[in-house]
Length: 399
Ligand code: NIG
Figure (tube, rainbow, N blue to C red):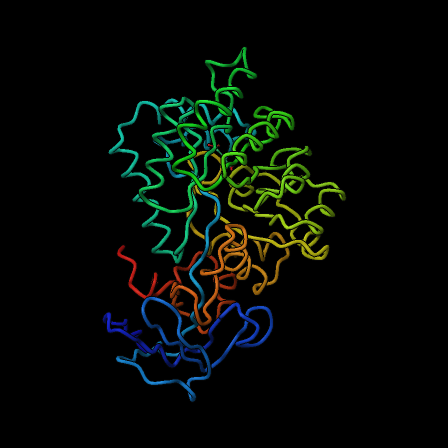
């Protein structure tokens, strides 16, 4: 392949000689991916101004040659937990020797996070955001959830807000050890003073609805209190066992139900009928030796799927969307096209964004150039670093 020649920052840039272009806009190409071959893309003012066959491309201030490579939309990661300190290597080691994953491990990270400085937490978030960008993620949500006091949760959402617009308040991640005998008191804190302190920084509210974390009634109380303050719900649902999370998410019009590993037929029907996206997080199933969610069953029922690495120090310490695409294809029976859509357009749906996750006119010019002739190589060549260049709003992402 010829070398990829990056844009220099001129007002408008025509990327030409694109071997295959995923627009995710069926009006611009074949199938749900809106796939074009021998394509070109015009970037103007940080947005996509035109997409189509190279032979019909308009002129631009500068032209760059993609060398026949594939160009895809930047990945949209709708689920991460990056405001943390410390490390859970020992827990991972124990798990690989047979100990099961449980919600309780979160407390280890809570203790380390409370003890960390603001500067340290900013550094951790920045490092992981850059790591994700280098691997093609151009939009990234991140959550609080390792503070679990009013001051530590407020600090977590304010740190997160310095690095992304997509901030989620997850005060209801675990009942911290000091409230072990008074979980109701902790829910009162999460729905009262902690919400007051966190709401100004967050767009979303999340709750870990699971045995060992929060039950359906507690989750409902948290989500409805935060929704009354303008935060939009998303739910950690049905990760480790069957439970009420998915149904609650759909009932409350949550943007997303995340994990979705243990689903009844009624849960699948609810996701298929409702507007809640099912966000699948195969990195956690890989790292916790859990079953993978049945993506095929959800897709065949008509649910909308997103994929995310779920980067966090406990259940899934990876920021690689490409790895998750490979898992989704190999282990969850998604086609390479379905997995790429879920990692881009699906993530955008889960974040209720229309400006990202696609490469058609009006979208932000977030794109990934792959060192491959097509996006299928993301699953076909697992573990190979295929991301050759990343642009966010038309500009190179600094690594
Ligand atoms: O999405 N399950 C809840 N929260 C995270 C894991 C948090 C942790 O173990 O530190 C998740 O998998």
